Image (cartoon, rainbow, N blue to C red; front, top):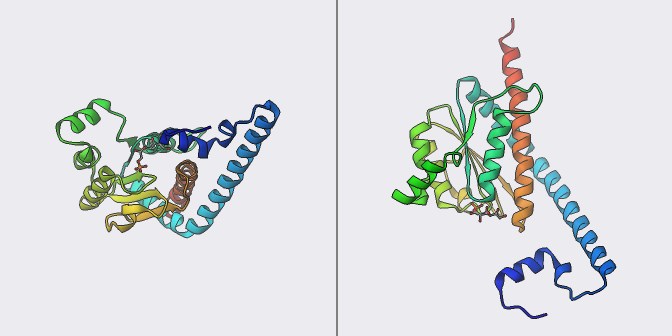
Length: 228
Ligand SMILES: O=C(CO)[C@@H](O)[C@H](O)[C@H](O)[C@H](O)COP(=O)(O)O
Protein backbone atom coordinates (compact mmCIF):
# COMPACT_ATOMS: atom_id res chain seq x y z
CA UNK A 1 0.00 0.00 0.00
CA UNK A 2 1.49 3.39 -0.93
CA UNK A 3 0.47 6.65 0.69
CA UNK A 4 1.75 10.19 0.43
CA UNK A 5 -0.03 11.71 3.38
CA UNK A 6 2.01 12.53 6.51
CA UNK A 7 -1.00 11.91 8.78
CA UNK A 8 -1.34 8.41 7.36
CA UNK A 9 2.38 7.83 7.97
CA UNK A 10 1.97 8.95 11.57
CA UNK A 11 -0.99 6.66 12.01
CA UNK A 12 0.96 3.74 10.60
CA UNK A 13 3.55 4.13 13.33
CA UNK A 14 0.77 4.09 15.93
CA UNK A 15 -1.42 1.38 14.42
CA UNK A 16 0.81 -0.78 12.17
CA UNK A 17 -1.83 -3.53 12.00
CA UNK A 18 -4.13 -1.21 10.02
CA UNK A 19 -1.51 -0.86 7.29
CA UNK A 20 -0.02 -4.36 7.13
CA UNK A 21 -2.08 -5.36 4.09
CA UNK A 22 -3.17 -8.41 6.08
CA UNK A 23 -6.57 -9.82 5.06
CA UNK A 24 -6.66 -12.59 7.67
CA UNK A 25 -8.85 -11.20 10.49
CA UNK A 26 -7.31 -13.49 13.12
CA UNK A 27 -3.83 -12.36 12.14
CA UNK A 28 -4.88 -8.70 12.39
CA UNK A 29 -6.41 -9.32 15.81
CA UNK A 30 -3.17 -10.95 16.99
CA UNK A 31 -1.27 -7.85 15.83
CA UNK A 32 -3.74 -5.59 17.65
CA UNK A 33 -3.26 -7.62 20.81
CA UNK A 34 0.54 -7.52 20.52
CA UNK A 35 0.52 -3.79 19.83
CA UNK A 36 -1.68 -3.19 22.90
CA UNK A 37 0.50 -5.38 25.12
CA UNK A 38 3.65 -3.58 23.89
CA UNK A 39 2.14 -0.17 24.67
CA UNK A 40 0.99 -1.27 28.12
CA UNK A 41 4.46 -2.64 28.93
CA UNK A 42 6.04 0.58 27.70
CA UNK A 43 3.85 2.85 29.84
CA UNK A 44 4.11 0.70 32.97
CA UNK A 45 7.92 0.80 32.69
CA UNK A 46 7.95 4.53 31.93
CA UNK A 47 5.70 5.37 34.88
CA UNK A 48 7.95 3.38 37.21
CA UNK A 49 11.11 5.00 35.83
CA UNK A 50 9.74 8.54 36.12
CA UNK A 51 8.52 8.07 39.69
CA UNK A 52 11.82 6.49 40.73
CA UNK A 53 13.90 9.20 39.06
CA UNK A 54 11.82 12.11 40.39
CA UNK A 55 10.94 10.70 43.81
CA UNK A 56 12.87 13.19 45.96
CA UNK A 57 11.99 16.15 43.77
CA UNK A 58 8.30 15.20 43.89
CA UNK A 59 8.49 15.22 47.69
CA UNK A 60 10.19 18.62 47.68
CA UNK A 61 7.61 20.04 45.27
CA UNK A 62 4.73 18.65 47.35
CA UNK A 63 6.19 20.30 50.46
CA UNK A 64 6.22 23.66 48.67
CA UNK A 65 2.69 23.13 47.38
CA UNK A 66 1.40 22.14 50.83
CA UNK A 67 2.96 25.25 52.38
CA UNK A 68 1.38 27.35 49.64
CA UNK A 69 -2.11 25.87 50.15
CA UNK A 70 -1.75 26.23 53.89
CA UNK A 71 -0.96 29.89 53.44
CA UNK A 72 -4.15 30.41 51.42
CA UNK A 73 -2.66 29.85 47.94
CA UNK A 74 -4.65 28.61 44.98
CA UNK A 75 -3.51 26.33 42.15
CA UNK A 76 -3.77 27.57 38.54
CA UNK A 77 -3.32 24.85 35.91
CA UNK A 78 -2.78 25.30 32.18
CA UNK A 79 -1.71 23.59 28.95
CA UNK A 80 -2.64 23.28 25.27
CA UNK A 81 -4.61 20.57 23.49
CA UNK A 82 -4.41 17.26 25.33
CA UNK A 83 -2.39 19.00 28.03
CA UNK A 84 -5.26 21.47 28.58
CA UNK A 85 -7.57 18.57 29.41
CA UNK A 86 -4.87 17.14 31.67
CA UNK A 87 -4.55 20.55 33.33
CA UNK A 88 -8.29 20.58 33.94
CA UNK A 89 -8.17 17.02 35.26
CA UNK A 90 -5.36 18.05 37.60
CA UNK A 91 -7.37 21.03 38.85
CA UNK A 92 -10.43 18.82 39.40
CA UNK A 93 -8.32 16.29 41.27
CA UNK A 94 -7.24 18.92 43.79
CA UNK A 95 -10.60 20.72 43.95
CA UNK A 96 -13.06 17.85 43.97
CA UNK A 97 -11.30 14.61 44.86
CA UNK A 98 -13.23 11.38 45.29
CA UNK A 99 -14.04 10.16 48.78
CA UNK A 100 -13.33 12.27 51.83
CA UNK A 101 -9.99 13.72 50.70
CA UNK A 102 -9.59 17.41 51.50
CA UNK A 103 -10.68 19.68 48.61
CA UNK A 104 -8.11 22.34 47.71
CA UNK A 105 -8.63 25.55 45.72
CA UNK A 106 -7.65 24.90 42.10
CA UNK A 107 -8.87 25.86 38.66
CA UNK A 108 -7.88 25.47 35.03
CA UNK A 109 -7.00 28.51 32.90
CA UNK A 110 -8.85 27.11 29.88
CA UNK A 111 -12.15 26.81 31.76
CA UNK A 112 -13.49 30.16 30.63
CA UNK A 113 -13.76 29.99 26.85
CA UNK A 114 -14.89 33.62 26.62
CA UNK A 115 -11.65 34.76 28.26
CA UNK A 116 -9.52 32.34 26.22
CA UNK A 117 -11.02 33.41 22.89
CA UNK A 118 -11.04 37.13 23.71
CA UNK A 119 -7.38 37.17 24.77
CA UNK A 120 -6.40 35.09 21.73
CA UNK A 121 -8.44 37.16 19.31
CA UNK A 122 -7.63 40.59 20.71
CA UNK A 123 -4.00 40.20 21.76
CA UNK A 124 -2.59 36.82 20.81
CA UNK A 125 -2.54 33.22 21.92
CA UNK A 126 0.89 33.64 23.51
CA UNK A 127 -0.59 35.71 26.34
CA UNK A 128 -3.62 33.53 27.05
CA UNK A 129 -2.22 32.12 30.31
CA UNK A 130 0.18 34.91 31.27
CA UNK A 131 -2.60 37.51 31.26
CA UNK A 132 -4.80 35.38 33.50
CA UNK A 133 -1.92 34.76 35.87
CA UNK A 134 -1.30 38.50 35.84
CA UNK A 135 -4.90 39.01 36.94
CA UNK A 136 -5.26 36.15 39.43
CA UNK A 137 -1.75 35.30 40.58
CA UNK A 138 -0.75 36.30 44.10
CA UNK A 139 2.43 35.48 46.00
CA UNK A 140 2.00 32.00 47.45
CA UNK A 141 -0.25 30.70 44.68
CA UNK A 142 0.85 27.71 42.58
CA UNK A 143 1.08 27.65 38.76
CA UNK A 144 1.23 24.21 37.14
CA UNK A 145 1.85 24.11 33.37
CA UNK A 146 1.80 20.94 31.31
CA UNK A 147 3.37 20.56 27.88
CA UNK A 148 4.65 17.63 25.88
CA UNK A 149 7.24 19.55 23.85
CA UNK A 150 8.11 21.99 26.61
CA UNK A 151 8.19 24.65 23.90
CA UNK A 152 4.72 26.25 23.86
CA UNK A 153 5.23 30.02 23.94
CA UNK A 154 2.10 30.67 26.00
CA UNK A 155 3.40 28.39 28.76
CA UNK A 156 6.86 29.97 28.75
CA UNK A 157 5.31 33.42 29.16
CA UNK A 158 2.97 32.14 31.87
CA UNK A 159 5.85 30.75 33.94
CA UNK A 160 7.77 34.02 33.64
CA UNK A 161 4.72 36.02 34.71
CA UNK A 162 4.02 33.65 37.60
CA UNK A 163 7.60 33.83 38.86
CA UNK A 164 7.50 37.66 38.70
CA UNK A 165 4.47 37.52 41.01
CA UNK A 166 5.99 35.19 43.60
CA UNK A 167 3.87 32.23 42.52
CA UNK A 168 5.32 28.74 43.08
CA UNK A 169 5.87 27.33 39.57
CA UNK A 170 5.65 23.67 38.57
CA UNK A 171 6.37 22.50 35.01
CA UNK A 172 5.56 19.09 33.59
CA UNK A 173 7.14 18.45 30.18
CA UNK A 174 8.19 15.63 27.85
CA UNK A 175 11.05 14.62 25.50
CA UNK A 176 14.08 16.52 26.89
CA UNK A 177 12.03 19.27 28.53
CA UNK A 178 12.40 21.62 25.53
CA UNK A 179 12.59 25.34 26.31
CA UNK A 180 10.95 24.77 29.68
CA UNK A 181 14.18 23.09 30.76
CA UNK A 182 16.04 26.35 30.03
CA UNK A 183 13.70 28.63 32.03
CA UNK A 184 14.83 30.10 35.34
CA UNK A 185 11.21 30.79 36.20
CA UNK A 186 10.22 27.15 36.88
CA UNK A 187 10.84 26.10 40.50
CA UNK A 188 10.04 22.40 40.01
CA UNK A 189 10.36 20.78 36.58
CA UNK A 190 9.41 17.17 35.84
CA UNK A 191 10.30 15.72 32.44
CA UNK A 192 8.96 12.47 30.97
CA UNK A 193 11.84 11.28 28.77
CA UNK A 194 9.94 9.43 26.04
CA UNK A 195 9.87 9.91 22.24
CA UNK A 196 6.10 9.17 22.16
CA UNK A 197 3.66 12.03 22.76
CA UNK A 198 1.06 9.53 23.94
CA UNK A 199 3.30 7.84 26.51
CA UNK A 200 4.42 11.30 27.66
CA UNK A 201 0.85 12.40 28.32
CA UNK A 202 0.02 9.12 30.05
CA UNK A 203 3.05 9.31 32.33
CA UNK A 204 2.34 12.98 33.08
CA UNK A 205 -1.01 11.97 34.59
CA UNK A 206 0.91 9.69 36.95
CA UNK A 207 3.22 12.53 37.93
CA UNK A 208 0.39 14.85 38.89
CA UNK A 209 -1.53 12.15 40.75
CA UNK A 210 1.65 11.48 42.75
CA UNK A 211 2.00 15.21 43.42
CA UNK A 212 -1.59 15.36 44.65
CA UNK A 213 -1.14 12.43 47.06
CA UNK A 214 2.16 13.76 48.36
CA UNK A 215 0.71 17.25 48.81
CA UNK A 216 -2.18 15.89 50.90
CA UNK A 217 0.34 13.93 52.98
CA UNK A 218 2.50 17.02 53.45
CA UNK A 219 -0.56 19.04 54.49
CA UNK A 220 -1.39 16.39 57.11
CA UNK A 221 2.16 16.57 58.43
CA UNK A 222 1.97 20.36 58.66
CA UNK A 223 -1.33 20.10 60.54
CA UNK A 224 0.14 17.55 62.99
CA UNK A 225 3.05 19.91 63.61
CA UNK A 226 0.49 22.42 64.93
CA UNK A 227 -0.83 20.07 67.58
CA UNK A 228 0.57 20.40 71.10
O1 LIG B 1 -3.01 15.78 22.68
C1 LIG B 1 -2.32 16.04 21.73
C2 LIG B 1 -1.32 15.07 21.22
O2 LIG B 1 -1.43 13.85 21.91
C3 LIG B 1 -2.40 17.37 21.07
O3 LIG B 1 -3.71 17.91 21.24
C4 LIG B 1 -1.39 18.34 21.70
O4 LIG B 1 -1.72 18.47 23.06
C5 LIG B 1 -1.43 19.70 21.02
O5 LIG B 1 -0.89 19.54 19.73
C6 LIG B 1 -0.66 20.79 21.77
O6 LIG B 1 -0.85 22.03 21.15
C7 LIG B 1 0.83 20.51 21.90
O7 LIG B 1 1.42 21.47 22.78
P1 LIG B 1 2.57 21.05 23.79
O8 LIG B 1 2.15 19.83 24.53
O9 LIG B 1 3.81 20.80 22.97
O10 LIG B 1 2.76 22.23 24.72
